[in-house]
Image (cartoon, rainbow, N blue to C red; front, top):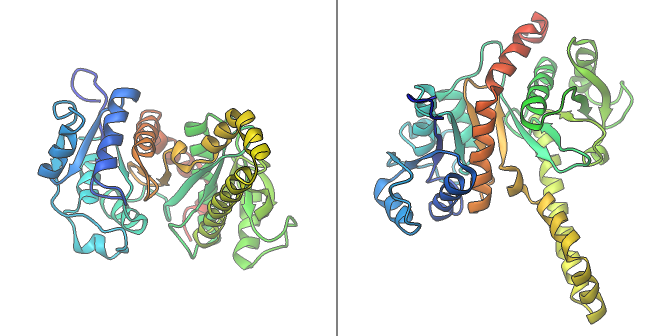
Length: 342
């Protein structure tokens, strides 16, 4: 909190993303005006002042200078070459207590590496994990890791379960999240060596309500509240789901436009169709969260527009205010030592 009891702002990387800085600034304005989330923009002042002026918001949102930025096609090493990039400066604001959380729609690899360098892992956390929210019914499902650690050890997967439980509790309000391990079969003996050992460790871990293995076709069924995976498998699964949703909606739009009768049916169901489209839109959830750091870092989709950026700022502010970092710290500290060190 700032002096006077005001909430700390969200540090928004204004130079990261396919649509930066225009859509990023527009999203910041939405976050401030429509969601009541304080935001500080991090980036090139002259460019950002012009973008704010277009919304008549120059006096509402402060700017912190950062002349460098990570390009969307740059990998993890770029964060080392540009220590004064906009994402690095945003992380520094959180670390020194001037901001509550970081939001970036820039390079995921750059955000993960910069977050690990600038915010650092929490004590006892082996590797941070990217958590995403899947639009399942009756409530969303958390999938992690979605790409931060491709080659995970079994002990890391146990920690990912703890990270996912904390996120489900704090971010989604689920009282007793059930955990599933993503692998190639529901039986305990299915999977590679890592999956089999992880199954043994998670099943024996106190404080985890383990439902056993889940498969790819279970991801959108709501069978469990938290799906645990290594970053390679989780990222492939996530992008397969995203591609399938885009393809299905594209085919559906074509089918609706093929005849007057189909168009009429579409008009009659437009309310339900709009609701479905909103539920499956990644921008509605604000983005992924890099869990396990000493600060909150939300990674918005690279192609995010203003709506997605505003949702990401809202998510980051809520997670920070509700103590996601402390909740993770408590779970890791309470876990058996064998699940913290290897």
